Length: 173
Image (tube, rainbow, N blue to C red; front, top):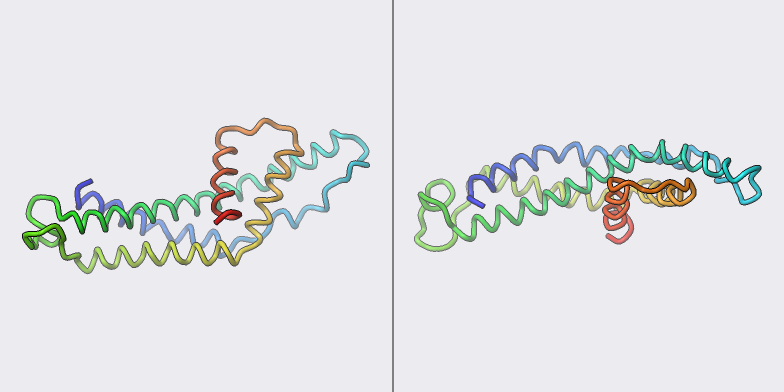
């Protein structure tokens, strides 16, 4: 990747970080609004399925929002790597960043590049702290997985992506 495209992509990712952080910072549990799950002694099995389907309908959009925050974190990490790689490889016509040709493989970053890198690193760090502090997102994810099993519906590719991504982000991370 050329330096200018790596820097432009990093700036775009950094600009979108506020939404991801707001998502986790303001996250409130949806699963806690539901009464406890019906036990096996529920009137009918279809009652349990309907309960879990209602939970899925409420939790699905929230899990998508948390997944988007995780995707921002992954994109920010990739952007950091791209910028640092571009700076250390020094490639590109006209020398390094800011038109400085050092005659070797590294270039001097501009203040804009440094600011972008700091915003990206800050975003990754803040999301990691929020992820650990906001147990409500993790609890909702666990309820979402339980509702998927209890509703008896076949998960779509999007749902499988959400589950695998959030498993890594919220539970394993």
